[in-house]
Length: 272
Image (cartoon, rainbow, N blue to C red):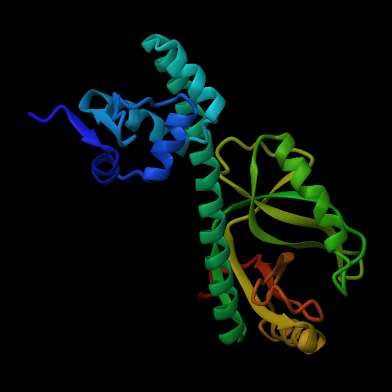
């Protein structure tokens, strides 16, 4: 069996560059088993291959050269295993964070696709929604994107409760004594409702049949009048009224789109 391998052979076999092997030699991390006195060629023994695997793995985990120097200086297996266990924990934490990023990208993609679909099929319709938990903050002014000023309060509230917000956000309205809708809260959906308790800043959007219609900045008044007319013509009783923001164009700051959702009180007589 061949005992020594040239630097070029090792580079090919272990998928590492010759430059890296020379650098690790220079830094005292991986000393070749033999250096030819005449040619200066470096040769490595097969038992050093595991060292190369360890070095490559550590570098993938952002281990510094100084840390590697300390490991290969001491040549202590228990110390190495303790160090690798710490790096494993750090890697797992990074994986969790990256998974959160991936989930956010997926959610954003679904939200945009759904928003575009709603705007394309923008006639009045009745849809059933399951119970939704939302975090809320007081809101006294809406229109011209004024409600965005209140959204900044929501993330801090839900983070303090150990939760995460979803991409669903909008405005909750109350009906005043004259029957007119007035903005009461801005809200954002909460991811994973199981550990969330209803309290001052956490509310539930009830499940049930909702009368829905989308609008944009350009046709907002016309659309509002249209759905109000529909409610009167169908003699519907509305329990609550929300607007959900639609994410169809992030770069057009001159416009906005929302979906009106009105919870129907006498929903037994209404078909979805």
